[in-house]
Length: 193
Image 1 (cartoon, rainbow, N blue to C red):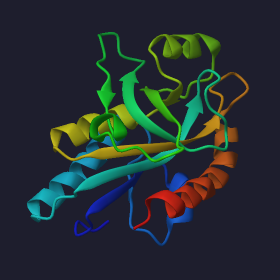
Image 2: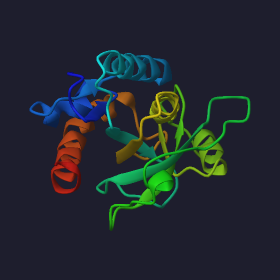
Image 3: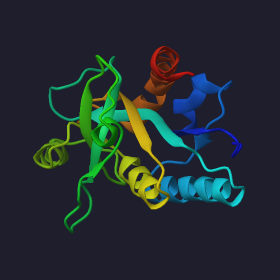
């Protein structure tokens, strides 16, 4: 990834970016620690080179919690909470929640982040109680890191599963290539310059 671009495109998992081979991007790795450290390193390098990014755009997959979303529609994340943190976790806002600029016709959601692949109804209920309708393993870390570097961030997720006992990590591995294609179509239609 070069620090000369004005926008930093970010994915957690290389398979999520499989349809973006011709577009410069950063792969952070899965989980909050990997997400925060890789993004911070990239942003710090850009600042050191006096070429800071004007915006971060995160694309990836998420689990659905509740009935508000389907597996074929990309969702704009407007806020994130942590669901594996025992202390109060403030809602971090991003994208249109901060700028007021929203892509017309794109559904929005709050996402709950944790270092766990959500697969059971107890976790789903807890996440719903936090006001989230999606779950993932990185967004909260991305938002906090972007806040520290004073860099605007927007996040778009395509649901990959229903975050329940019928979903396994192996199934996610099989599905993610299709999800990358869906993200690329969305990117080409709504985000590409």
